Structure formats: structure tokens, C-alpha cells
Image (tube, rainbow, N blue to C red):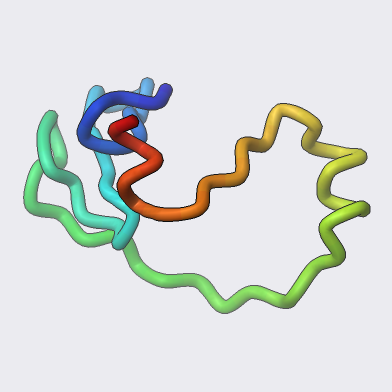
Length: 63
């Protein structure tokens, strides 16, 4: 769920910012562990995850 502060984790109620830090909720102060990932083609992602929102910047999260 998108909030003014970031993305809300519905399981814990924690809100995560774009760098993976919980800024509020049960896990406040916790840093997510980065995961290794591969580059994906946008068209393939968009077909399987049409609900994806593309943001230009951090400021877009609060706009």
C-alpha cells in the first residue's frame, strides 16, 4: 500500500522508504537486506505485473 512516507507492509504495518529502511511501524529502524537481481525486459514484466507503477523519483511517492 502506498503512503505519504513510502510503501506500507500489510503484514507488519511497517512503512518502508525507497532505500529499504522501515520509517514507522513494528519494524521501524530495520534495514532490508539487498537482493541480487537480474535485468528484466520491461515488456515481459508489464505483461505479468500490469499493476506495476513506474515512478520518476522519490518525490513521486509523496505527490
